[in-house]
Length: 253
Image (cartoon, rainbow, N blue to C red):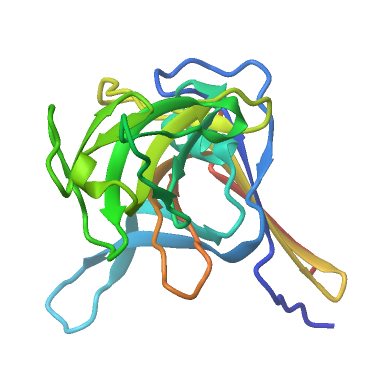
């Protein structure tokens, strides 16, 4: 029987080196969760030899490359760090509070102290909006109506704004054993984390499997839509490993 394939398949990445070219002794394979699209593309330059006639007398293959793409829905810090950035990642929450509830400005001393979730630590101010959704102005001291000062988690307003509803947004950090935080550093050009890519798709019990022995990511994109899920896009290119291996393909037929 003929072999066909259907669906997005499964894609796995196994980090081989970090951003500085250091070999990872015991890498952990990572699955691209909820894969939406996957592709592997082979391209090669052709060089043609002509004589006096219209058509070439010989064709030789020149440079060739293998590129891949993946669109996946499940966000995972290990994929971002191990396969694209290759830097250090730590446990911890780095999050934003986008206030949609609001708090009423009290009487003297006209202050609101925000309390970050998860017993967190206040990080930075992201602005204050009034009940009409208009931004208030941050000042260094002595706020007038429509203004505020901010010192850590404490927001101070004008006495003239007592009783008004305001919406305070901010960033914060907190400890966690599951959440991940990655701060990307400006490392030297040249090296990039290398990884092995394994792509598998099966239909009617017949597998099609591709292993790219060494890859480097070239693109990581995040695009949001008003009424749809975030689907990150991850592009990469394959090259030969020290043994000269580039790709292995396994088919049922």
